[in-house]
Each structure stands twice: as structure tokens, then as C-alpha cells.
Image 1 (cartoon, rainbow, N blue to C red):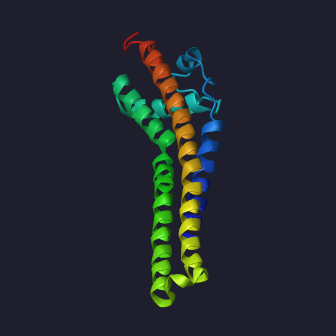
Image 2: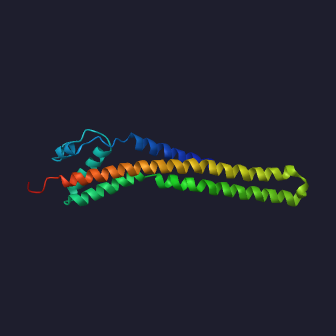
Image 3: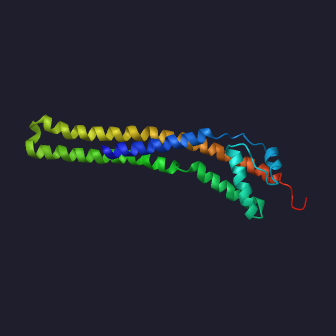
Amino acid sequence: MFPIVGVSLWMWALIARKAFQLWSLKSRDLTLEEALAYLPGQRVEKEGLRSRFFILFSRIRERVTKEEEAMRIALRKEKEELEGGLRTIKTLAAIAPLLGLLGTVTGMITTFQAISLYGTGSPKALAVGISEALITTQSGLLVSIPGLFAAGVLSRRASKYYADLEEFSTRFVANLPKRGD
């Protein structure tokens, strides 16, 4: 039972951190015109998803000459940050029922040991093992189901932000001044 509680605490801590990160982002905080105005190297003052992305793009662009390549690198880094932790949450949610199943197996072993000692005539001896089996199964499912639901919600939110960034970056690169202009 302790491993299930540990997995649950770890998973919900990650969910809370990721939810705070995703819900604190503002997707419409930097317009295309504002981003283009900052190209000469001025500092972007707004703090949000697009401005963080733009700052990252600007830093990479200084080192990479091709804008499209710099944009792909910046998008990849933002995607990693947006999706960071989601695989761990999904893995922990998938592990919880397996830990419950492990508890079921150990509970049934306890039950069969009681049967071998007392026979089937002692319901009290059987109830301990069966109770252990059912409680761990239920606990594993109670941890897993909401965890998978939360992971799905967070994944959709991260995908929405990433799609917004892709669309913004495509318009941004298309509106960049050409070299020599």
C-alpha cells in the first residue's frame, strides 16, 4: 500500500506543477508587430509564452544564420518544456494499477496460506487476505483513473499552446525583413 501512496503523491505533485505552469502562460501576450519591432535586439518586457519563445528564438538566431532553422530549434525547445513531465505523469498513472495488482497477488497468497493452515472453515482467516487484495486493487485504480484524466487535460493544454506557437512562428518568419533590406 505504501508504494501506491508514494506513486500517488509523486504523480499529484507533478500534476500540480505542470498545471500551474500551463495555466500561468498567456498565449496572446506578444503580437507579431511587437515581435518584429524588437528584432534589432531590444528587450521584450512582457513575460508569457510568446515572449519567452521570442527571446529564445532571438538568442538562437544570433548563432544560426538561417531563420527557419533557428525557429525549428526554438520550437523544439519550447515543445520539450511544454511537454516536460507529462510522460512521467502518464507512467505513474499506469504503474498505480500494477502496484494494486501486486497487492492483489500478495493478498491472495495470504488467503491461500490461511486456507492451508486453517482450511476453509475459518472465514476470519480468509477475510484478511481477501481484504488486502481488494483494498490494494481499489487504491491502485483510485490513483490511476484521475491521474490519466489529468494527464489528458494537461496534454491537450500543452498541445494547444504548441499549435499557437507554431502558427505564430510561421507568420513571424514569413514577416522577417529579408537580408540586405
